[in-house]
Image 1 (cartoon, rainbow, N blue to C red):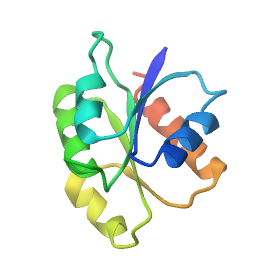
Image 2: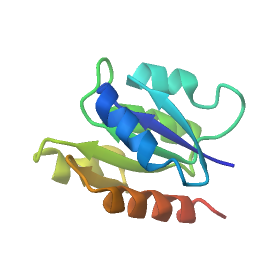
Image 3: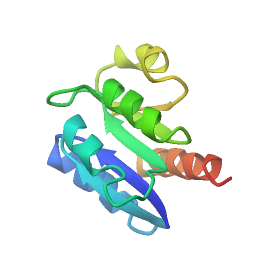
Length: 123
């Protein structure tokens, strides 16, 4: 089964993302910080296929979290989420190619990005 990691320090957002993915064929892991995400990712020897990460996290930011995860999992697809408008243009420079989703987002928007990311990691 494919593995998706949700990283957000806001429990309401994290739980919403997880709930929206309930019917998707993914194993969803959750982390409240970049450090927790890095510790959790690959802990059991399984790769992470997709990360959905907020930008503003306690400790290391979402961009740095994604960069470090990409170093460990080169095929990782990332979806950056943020409520700050200024984050939209900066995300590509910070993390390389990744999707950007502005909070608040619609279920269909998130699912489309997750499905596209999972499709691109299928090979």
